[in-house]
Image (cartoon, rainbow, N blue to C red; front, side, top):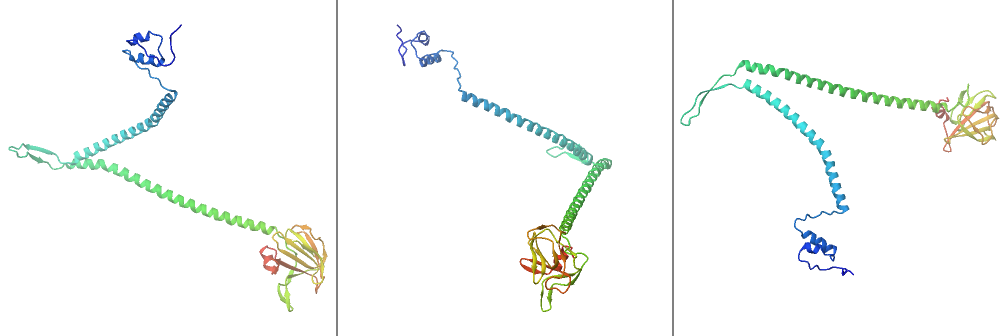
Length: 314
């Protein structure tokens, strides 16, 4: 029977090799003895979470490198281009300076701490003229480009102003046209109450009392038309207006036809603009055949003439 005991067990071996040969070691003791052996390389044991973090770090470095590398390449290209341009400009400036600066010639070297004497020659007019002749075409090109840019800018501003003016004119024309069309459609929705008739009496005081309507002289039996789409609210007889018809329009305006000889509609009936609602007569308090037309708004009588003129009915 094995004498191995559970739990921690102390090894009595003198060396790790002797201890490894025994069978009665715990895992922790066995691992400690293995690590004590000469030449042992510790094993790197990483958890899944640590490996995940390392993977994410590598991915992040690769991503940053992929974003930074093109930027660095572009910056290097720009710097290289700028360096080339600067070197070219420096070379041109050096050439101009060499052509423009006077030439110097050493005559003798000084002695005893005295500076050497230098003979300065007069500037070469031919060199100066050559440098100036070389600079003139470049200046002319720059001036021409600047003039073209200024002209293009002025043309662009003029085009923008012209476009804005055209847009404003178009908008105002469209608004005016829309308003005119709306007005025309609105007027087309009305119909004259009577045709081929003239006004014989206007709205206002008459014979000591208020005449609340406008009279149209016509022969008995002349047709009378609905001025707009409406509902018949009155169709009958009273002692003043005789046979009369009242129409209530969609906006609440009430139009009354009085002194009719015949009523051709019934109360509650819907009529359209232009429908015949009755015939001219002289019923009620009347001295002759005519149409007495009244217009009521907000429960008060108003002058029918402006109302009819505004709608093109008179």
